[in-house]
Image 1 (cartoon, rainbow, N blue to C red):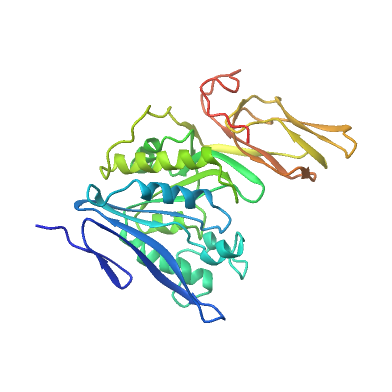
Image 2: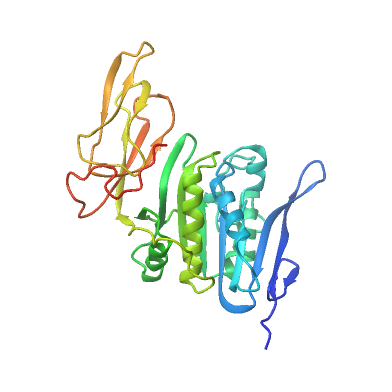
Length: 334
């Protein structure tokens, strides 16, 4: 018996086909309509229903390219299950070149939203009812915030067996056991019973190829682990490091930053990470690691003030003392 069609918005997609749908969000003062762009891959064979999304923050473009490349390699004729892809959730922020919505609300603190709420609440509600509610697994893609870059990493509830299995399948250099944040898509979707992975990689407004490629491979590995596609070709990924605690090394003073720490670098307490100088190049302060672990994020800002976050170090339980950068690590000179 043929597989049933899939409904989203006001349309239905027949099995073995792919279709783009625009879910209405709002109308601009010019009279133009704004919609949530969605592409549905409805496979010919039965399988899970999964969503992938990017650009909940309008400046996070890495995930947009990840979604594009993942979709480009899928065929609904050979696909098992259904994939709902939302490359740009914060459409208005993305078009304006802004992280947040026009009213300065953070969309990722507005879930599950409300059909009669603010613009952020209505977008969140639309995402929850038309996408999340139809799915059992989701991958939410992000990058570092303004002038910060992140090592490719999965943030998830690693104490949940199914979530951890899919995080391991993704194969990012680091898996971080991250607490849920009220108002986030991950928290709201988890309350609805979905298994959610949050991918972090790269910098805002940058097409960092290493972060894009890690994201594409990771998403394809998860789809393969769910039986939706064949496993990607090539060498299997190295086992992900597990982090449960982390902290930022902050600027000990104000100055021009020369940062030597690379993403993926292993550090020990007291290791030199860089330094601060004045406008004539005179060294004013050194920056040192305050804990052992792996560099999972760093600032890209050249000028910093006392207390600014500089290097994000993830602690790795049972790590080998004295291990240096490059010994089997994913080291990126961002």
